Image (cartoon, rainbow, N blue to C red; front, side, top):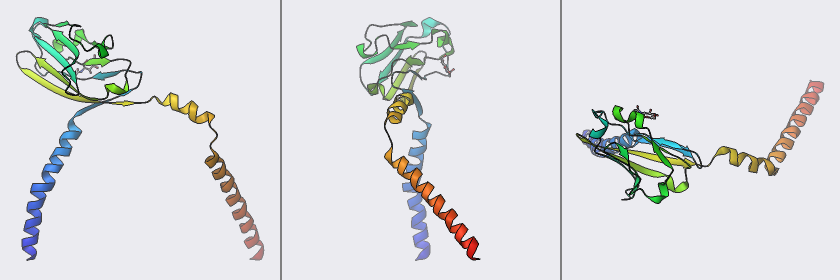
Length: 181
Ligand SMILES: *[C@@H]1O[C@H](CO)[C@@H](O)[C@H](O)[C@H]1NC(C)=O
């Protein structure tokens, strides 16, 4: 009976926990990038097989959240603004000096909340490469600190006063016990 249970547990581990473990490790292997609202972020994308010439770069296309709208397009090694989603107009740059190294990373400027999410980079050269990267956006800390500082924090004052009282009471207590002993 016990052996049967152990055998079953092993099977459960293999069929249930192992796939879950593999799935989560795959998720953690996925590339993630963080950027501040109003700031910029570099979304990485590179191919292990670099092109021989710039003309060999048939097409590189960046897309966001499975949208058919293009974030950025490179055709025959040249940036094409036609067909770029207006939302990204003048906000995206790439690194042409890196193209021949197979690096088609882009820099997204003036980040907005709507920019967050999954991006896919499709490279069409000798072979096809698809990379995904997830962008997380955060509010800038500098904006939060002044608004917090101008507000009085009553709970902090209460904490400091009670800490002072506890200190005074415990030192009085020490004095009293010191006298009595
Ligand atoms: C690709 O180029 C960008 C910009 O120069 C750089 O930050 C990044 O490290 C490069 N990636 C690789 C894999 O070389």
